[in-house]
Length: 131
View 1: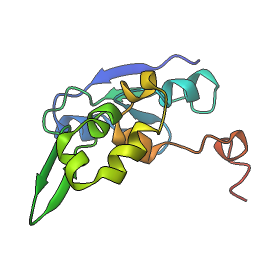
View 2: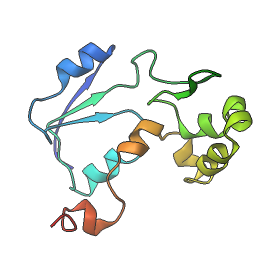
View 3: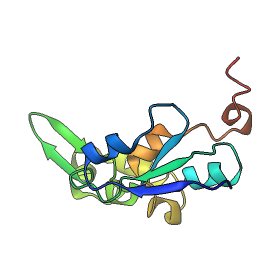
View 4: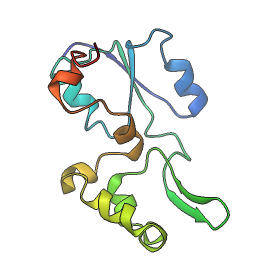
């Protein structure tokens, strides 16, 4: 793993300001279950890692009959799988998320990170499948 600068944002505006204008130089981290593996395998080598875990309002599950389900990007998979609201209104989602990974990963991984993660396949991770 290469050396990198670590910064922790306290607000979305601060996080945006910490992001580099050049794609690939800065990565965002919250749970870190995917990013750290990519960095250890030298798939990505950011110059800066911005922690967004301390930004308020980016986690949690809520339901409104008019607006539907809201899941914050920093919500851990375990919190979605065990949410009474999700179990009541979206039982299939609760079941699927509870099967998505090992308990250790579900306790760390965020839904935002999972939606944004790169493919697990080494062929696609290295850009070879994007020809």
